[in-house]
Every structure is written in structure tokens, then in C-alpha cells.
Image (cartoon, rainbow, N blue to C red; front, side, top):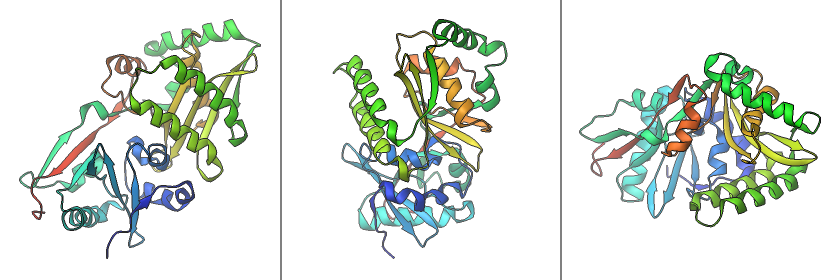
Length: 306
């Protein structure tokens, strides 16, 4: 049976979502919303195989690649070799998989003579304890709590947290325009795709299992966040967090309040990777991660040798 690939659309998300909870996976890609957010940047296409698995076909800068199938762990070998066959026979390419989760990679235990498996160090996701992030408890998070307290003291009576819905999209768009303008033109193309992905989420949020929240000061949005929930791992995935950098403590405040209001029971918090950027790495490490969701690149050494 050939795989019928098509682009990820908002109307597909409800149908796709159950496949994302079939096996252990603590990466941000275990949340269905991630594939929708970055659909245009990575040219994300999916196919449902046998009604039991989701297969992926993506491309970036002309290079075709895939991700590990979304399926039950005991069926991972079967669907892995199905996508190998598709790449070899249909695309006439060796299979390349990027951002393969650690649990799936270990379970496959591929022959090193046939597949090169290497960790993508800069792509590992940062994992945090949910209670610690909501309460900012302990010595290691004392500075974060001080920033939050300073923000509250400065803006008490002038700020509020609001749960966002589709009708608030104009506020988010207006904030995003100002935020993007501050970044200037000398920034990565990826930022423009991120903004475009956020716009698509806001246009289609009625069809998406998404949680959103914003901080308003004097009636104006100054920060917002978008997340989703992995029920199998009891894990919140924070896809987007933007704040006015000129306001002290605002990033810490939206970080905490979004979790308190939208993910009060999440055991783990996934705040995604650091893109290999030193400043972002230091910021993420400063929140005292309890672990990492490591990711791997899998490259087939030779077509037809599986």
C-alpha cells in the first residue's frame, strides 16, 4: 500500500491527536500542535498508514527527511521499515530522520552498520518540574521569584492575566507586529515562519487543542504564551512565549502564570530546545531543569540495505 501524504491542516488535528499518545515520548514533537505550527517551515506532510500509524515526509532547503512514526511502541519496527521502504523505492533516497525521540531510538536499537545514529545535542528539550515552576520554590529559583515579586510590586492594580481565546487574536497580532519590528530585519528567516505559524494557530484555534494566555498592563497585551498538553506524559509543552523585554520580571511572570492557570496539574514542563544559542541555553538552565528530552538523527547508510 502506497502512502498518501498531504499537508497538515487544522481540520486534521482532531484525527491526528490520538496517534501522539500511543508510546512514550517526552519531546515537544509529542504534541500534535508542533507539526501544525511549523508546517510551512519544514513543509510537513503526513500520511495515515493502516489506520494505526502516522508517517511523515518533510523537507528543508531541498533536503527530504522524516520523523519517527507515531504508533504503538510494539509496532515501531514495522512502521519504521515502512518509511525506509518509501524513501528507498518512491523517493530513491536513503532515509534520513531528524529529531527522533530517545525512547523510540533506543527501542529500535538499529544495526550501526546499516544506520548512523547521532545525538542532535543542540536540539534537546529542557524538562522542568511542574510544581517548582508554578511555585518558584527552592533556592535555585529564588532569583526568578524575586523578579516576579518586583513585577507585581511595580504593576499591582495595573496588570492582569487573561485566558486567551480565538476572539483575542487581534491583540496577539498587534503585539506580534511590535515584537517582530523590534527584532529588525537582520534575524533568522525561521522567526518569520514562527510568526506565520502563530497566525495560523490563531485563525484556526477553534479546531485546535491549544491553551493560550496573556498578560495585560493598563489594558494592553505585553506578553502571551501558547501551549498544549501531552496526557500520556502528564506534560505541558510550551510552544510559544513572547514578552516585552523592556519590562522587568514580565517573562518570569507570564512563565509562571501561564502554568498556574492553564496547566495546574502538569507533572512535567517541556520548554523546548535552545537552538544552540548560548544566551538561550543560559536562560533555560537558570530554571533548573530536571532533565532533557534528547533527540537523534538517523541516517540510512545505503539504499536497499535495511
